[in-house]
Length: 370
Image (tube, rainbow, N blue to C red):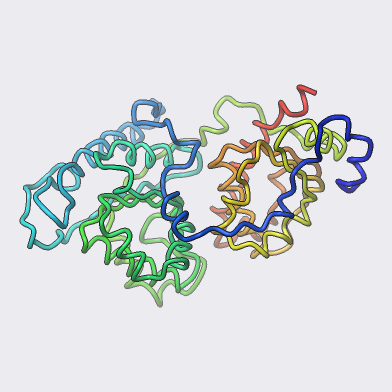
């Protein structure tokens, strides 16, 4: 059943039809990309004090302590412009003419899905004693999109005055990104910017399984040398003590909920996948502006890897913005083929499944309250 067919006779539920992602083609100016490099709405209020370590996982408690010291060490003047403490609170101040230290200039949080890495990264951003304009927070994809929008040199100039750059979901998907990010971070570190990143992949393993990593070993090792790695163990908090994700609803249930929910969108899933190919991933956040919920009919497995990777980015932006997702068709754990889940991008796909599952739970009330 199509969305339009299912929608017949539902005009009495709301004054207007639902919105449609497929009808949106946002254009995002470069200055908005820079201004929005802050923790997403889901992490506005998080702090180290609100992170609840699992008592069975001492690495979580240890990570909080290290990051608190890291934030405290970023006080004072910018690293390239005056005396300050070392990044981890060690060492003495250095003169304006001194070069950046040769050791790690950042901290790297490695762990599985849902152990709170983004919570900790956002807490670090909030705890760093600097004005918001001197701190930047974005996903790896958003960082590479910023370079695409501003150009490499302008990005270096824009971020070089920052105390801290936080990079969430750090991954290297192709050789070009390897060289680009290695060079960019090297320039920023030389200019006194501290780094913090999260990933499901240890720095020395970035790019493994995706391309001929051996050909870019120097760049990958260079990235690894810039970080002190903190391993955070634990289970996905999104599934701790929570019920399984709700089974998909019928097309009729999803459509009725979309019409009854102000500012909800309603789209046919295959059509949405086609539309995503026409919108640059840097605009997926803007694509979801103002939405209270996303309603999808006819969810089915994604047809190819390019489509799957675009869906991963959309899932990340919806999760960041806490937009519930109500769907009919197949459950989200059947979106990706076994080949995809066993391939080089498997960690991205599992993250998308985890996040979409959490958003599906959030959407249950849209149906159950009707």
